Length: 121
Image (cartoon, rainbow, N blue to C red; front, side, top):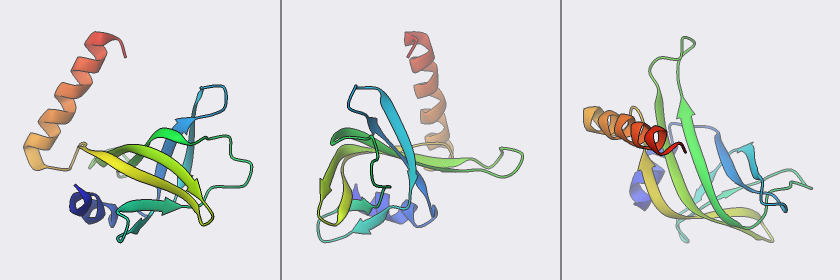
């Protein structure tokens, strides 16, 4: 999983990290993740006073052209931690999105969207 994350991450200068704040409400911020190969984690800085808290989180990398075509995306699910050097996402799952994995990746992306819509989530 780590090699897949790092291989695709190079195509995205920024990403969106989403976790929850102290009240449990979802909270998202743009960040610039950097792989820490020795620990197989993603490091990034967030502004001081950020409301996001340690715990389950995700990192969304996506891009598209001006007409919203040529979408390419993936999601990393994991655990958000904080240490003396900043924030760290410890990946647990790589979720390919549109534009990753060829036609099969696109098909998985569409099917997953339909399943979420059917569940109402």
